[in-house]
Length: 192
Image (cartoon, rainbow, N blue to C red):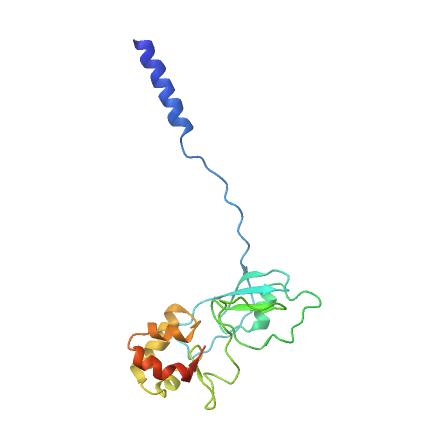
């Protein structure tokens, strides 16, 4: 009887040992490149992130995610990705445009359908002849929109600080104080 008990204990121990979790190697992730270029951030921005993460796609030496300092331009992002490949057409890329966190820069290929759109040129926030850019407009510019006072304008800027760039105008509904009626007023007056 003792012998049967010992054999049963050994079989149980071997069974438990075989079912124990095993360590499996994790595949390597692509490297995240950080640029060392020193770009001065605007002094008027109080809550600026320490680094921006930008996706680089297309005809560059190291496509993928790169980290660049705030205030970086598309040219800095391309440098961080190893530069464009020989023969890459840069005529459709605005190298002087400032980039935002979570944006994609596509070189020689069309951007992804869900990529954050680049701000349209025309200065900070837009011009009187076109819609106001939600991603670059300041509190004063947003305050000038119909139905938007200084409190709501500040909330829009705070939403942008917390969540990153607006990817669509519809995200304006997520800002506290902007309901369906006010959104209907603003829809044609703003862009991303």
